[in-house]
Length: 152
Length: 139
Image (cartoon, rainbow over all chains, first blue to last red; front, top):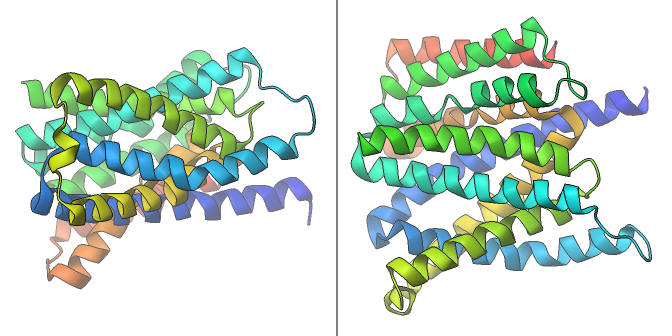
């Protein structure tokens, strides 16, 4: 079996791992907010614990790059803005849930794969191809998520 | 109206996150990228909490601290690290479509532990999600 194919299969497994973690996290967050309230404090505590537990892995990954390795400024900026975008998404979703029912908020926020497809088409044309099949798949996923959350 | 706007911002934020991460991860290893992105988010949130709710954390219940620390480990150590790893291996479009399956896990847990029932249209939604995932995976 070729190495790229193995890496791709592992990628799918890892992606489902992320989906599982986010799925569990949604249930735990809802329960935690019901008990202790204050979404902003909750986000800060969760982020702090995330940074603390991830720091050793980050240091190891940095050392594994070899002596004198430094991330390119451009790549660093992309990662830092990616973090800010993710927190904007998380925070906005919590704010929306504090103002509107889940049945209204979830279908809207679940459209984010379409945003990704649109942005990839717009900005990553040279790096990543978006086929019709892939775009159709993204539309099916989002439609499914909308149905699932709307009739909850 | 503010709620609708916030939900739309959530979609834009998460959708943009995947594309930006993909660009940055071309050169930065996922574990380092995950930690750096979290630091950026933490700094932003700390600034916000010092403006809106200074000293609020001091009065937060200890059990709440423990609970959300656990949430942070699951969401960021497992979720976000897997997210960045998968984005690096599969590309932003494929990876983010698979992450969208997370509501399935939430529903499964809700049915299993809180006794919720499934509406027939929810089953249709599940079929669409699985079908969509298969389309993306096999493209």
